[in-house]
Length: 287
Image (cartoon, rainbow, N blue to C red; front, side, top):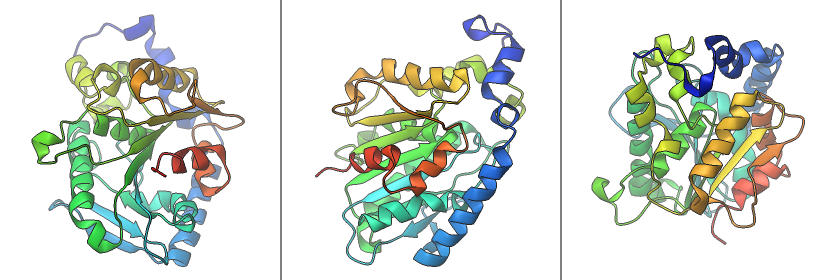
């Protein structure tokens, strides 16, 4: 690994910018709320749990279906710095979309350091391919919108930087995407303490940076972030907005900054059917 720091940042500045648990001492309150709301969502909606989309132990998804035939499917990718958390922690995302008539597939992937960020990207591609092939028969039809929070936002954006024709599809398999508090430029993470698990060097950080890649589709990508997040997460959202101008959702002149929310509280805006975040994500489905 090289030792030059990106953006003239010190290692201390990188740590402050990316260590969200240190930045927000009330994080456990919000994580506990995620778990509580997710438990209620699972009890109410009775999803099909741990559906295999691949052959690996972690290549599973949970499938939430509306009572009537679904109008489309949200494929949602959990966060946790690619090294923690689980699809079940994000079940609170499902009710608002199910109530609006959409299926929701919550995706797992193998966590670092047991595997690499690159393989998490490949696993999420596999989940999308499974949904294209098997989703309609399982009650989760097209159109598909993908989304994710934090590391899941990164993985969402990487689906845009994918040659789907090389994977046997005639067209890009999704209609839009939403990256909430996503990490889109990975260079600073080479110098972040969590890189003991990521194992990134400069070359791999660039290869895994959607902001350094070219999208293979002009499908809209909603970029959203809590207005009270660290300066680096705000910057990460702006970097992605500037990098892919042809993917701006119609009618949006800037990323969605959600007032009064930080990295943990902002995710719970998906638990509110009327929040700006939920409504902007629903608007990604073709009408």
